[in-house]
Image (cartoon, one colour):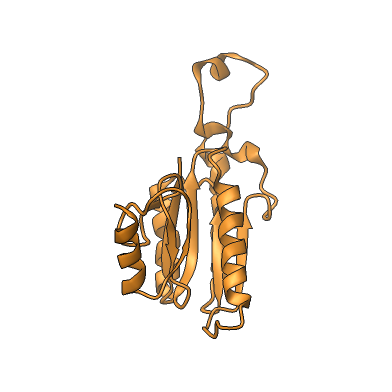
Length: 177
C-alpha cells in the first residue's frame, strides 16, 4: 500500500499518524505491525494501545515514541478532545522482574544446565494478574493507556480487549517483530 493509500485512510477518519519509513498493513487499527507500518491512532476515542512482541523487539522504544507523539498532539493549542493524558504501563513500571517470563523460551540446554532456573507458566500467572488489575484501574475515557509488555498470549490480549470494550473504549494492538 503506497503513500496515496495511507493518505486515503487518514482522510476518511480524523486520525493522527506516527510516520515511519514503512507502510500501513491493514485498513484498521486493530492489527498493525510495528516494523512495517505507519501507526494510525484515533485520538478522540482510542483508549488502549497494546504492544505485543518478542523480547528486545523494540516494544518499549515504540511505546515511548507513541507516548511522546500523542502527548505533543494533546498539548497542542488546536486540540480540544476528550483525551487528557497518555500513560505507559510496562513490566518495569509495575516492578515485575524479567524472570517471570523465563519459562517462555526454554531451550534443551537450559533444561540440562543447573545454573538456570526454569520457570513454568504458573510463575507468569501472577504477573499477568498484576498487569490486568492495573490495566482495569487505569482504563478511562479521558486516558490513552499504552501497555508495554510481551502480551504474547492471545487469550490474555482478548481479555484486555474485553475489559476495554466493557467500558466502551476502543483498542489497538501494535506487534513488534
